[in-house]
Each structure stands twice: as C-alpha cells, then as structure tokens.
Image (cartoon, rainbow, N blue to C red; front, side, top):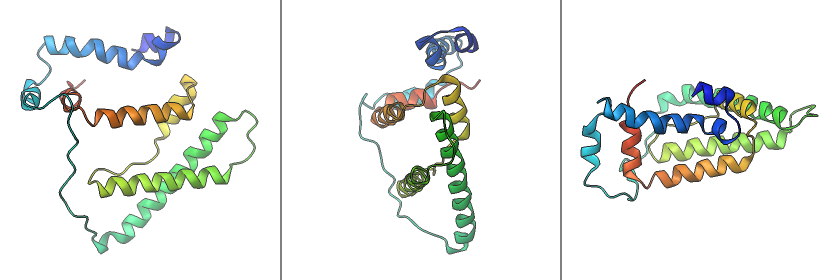
Length: 171
C-alpha cells in the first residue's frame, strides 16, 4: 500500500488502499483470519435488502444538556477550522475565510449529526486528517464527496457487503 501510494501514478496511487484490501482479504480468508460465523449469519439474506431502521423513540436527558452544548460548540469550532483549511487548499490566492461557506458547512455538519441521532447512530463531524489526505492526493473536488456519499448509500442496501466489512480481519 505504501509503495503504491509513494511510487504509484494516477489511479494506482489514488486506489492504493482499495487495491491492497482487495488483495489482502482473500489471503486472510485463506489463512483462516476471517471469522466465517459473520458470513453464515448473513447467508439467508439477499444480496440487496432495505436497511433496518431502529425502533427506538428519541429521548433526551436534560442533565446532559450542558455537556452536549459544550461538545456541539467544540464540533462547530472544529468544522470552522477544517473548512477554513479547505479554503486555503482550494484557493492559491487565499487571504481570509469566506464566512458564507463556513456557515453553510457548519450548518450541514450540525444537520448531519441531528439526522444521525434521529436514526439512532453515532453523530459525525469533520475529520481533519481527511483534509491532509485531500491535500496530499490533490483530490479536492466536491463531486468526489458526492460520489462517495452515493456509494455509502448504495452499500447500505447490501447486507453481504456490510458483513464483509464487519468480518474484516484485524491488522
């Protein structure tokens, strides 16, 4: 993976992680490092199925309001810093932050976390390491993010791929 990323060109470099996972997974399976019980549990399922939504009603514990507000503020500040860094990467003649972009980004981050909470899953936030990865690879187009989001939505409808991911051997 490191070799492809450092010395590879074009698509080999961009897809180095995916290529190595695709090569290592069958090898790990052959060496008995993949837990087959996960796949046996998924066997009766079809290749495509609707995702299961939780049957829990949302609840809020008021004693957690202040820690939640502190966490939300920290997430908003992190998103602000990450979006500002993205602006610097995307514009060679960057001088100061464009506040409209930051406002929309922080709002989208908060709405995504709200939706995740309503669906009963873990909240999300921007990830600073991904910005460094974007700068290192030179891939900063918005359409890449939309394509990856669409891929994740499509994968949510494939229980077999979910089981492949869950059953992935540890490093």
